[in-house]
Length: 190
Image 1 (cartoon, one colour):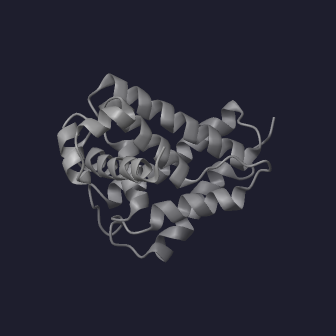
Image 2 (spheres, rainbow, N blue to C red):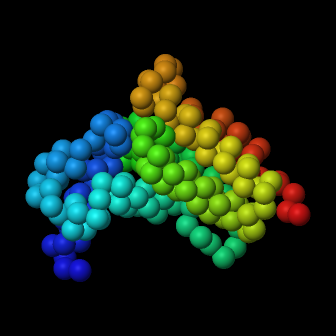
């Protein structure tokens, strides 16, 4: 794929991610996304086949950009650092946008299935990063940890619950680390 095509794909994913996060899947049209990206709407079908394909590309990119990359050795400290970093940054930054995309209900069965699959994959990768092997117990704990991070993001961004929404990142990091460490650290590796 040419550099121009890759740049256009990236513009479309960025525009779609923002629209899907703030307006939801169902309310977002491909025409709005194309207009936001400054490209012809036909390019969405060319590069992604459909709105659903573009949504999948957005979520795949979210998982890559949020971390939880597969590692050969368990690394609890790095995983905690990544999760905490994403959760405590300003509610308007790209990390929060990514997390909102994972939260926003779509009202569309296909989009919701893609979201569930994405969250499951992210939890599996997180469990593998902290435990080396994604046992059922560790997977449940990873999903709970994700729900803590996603819930915090929702309270800080879309509902803007105070004082959490405007809290200093340093004030948030310590209690969040305690909660995540309790969930993901010291898990028995059966």
